[in-house]
Image 1 (tube, rainbow, N blue to C red):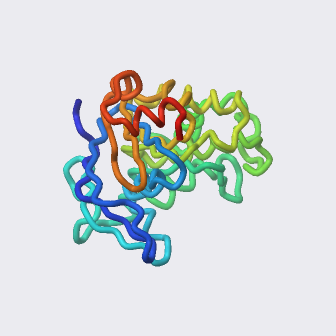
Image 2: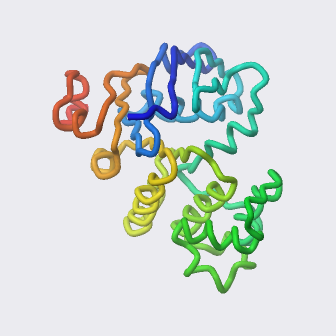
Length: 250
């Protein structure tokens, strides 16, 4: 297993509330890592620590180190916007920009001045195809993104994130607001994308974790309880709290 993200001594406070407590974790490259655990255990906080989105919350304090490809994203002189570009977040609910389908995908490439050897038209088509949306929207690219269904909007947000050429895809329960068919579509895309990207997902749905995970991080009360290959964690967990959670005891 080649490590892509290495987390060392991560602690996060929201005001006086200690949310993550000295956590160490490894996230392997080009696999789907699922962060799971009961509500309020710090899953989303851990996810957002990877691309420094935590700092947009007032009163948050972060200590420790998060290494991506060996570089500490919390180190001095780090360009936070570049950190966020290389580790985009797919949220629980899609938030398309108030513009056309085409401009949603093109927006990030324009502001970051990404060329990549493609014309903008070619890039928009390429990333919509990667997100599995091209055939559904190719005849209405100039229509407002708000007219898409919720499932289509989520795939558009995925295309928008891919268009800025990230290294990591972060998903914060990205199927929780979707109908079952749309959720299956997002799951299929994520499985395909792990061939080229490292994917990190937060989910509270054990069935989804079992379907998607190559690697698992199980958290409880802000602490990492157990981590490892999905088959080992699900079928032969070392920790009693992991066994209890998987069996549905809490």
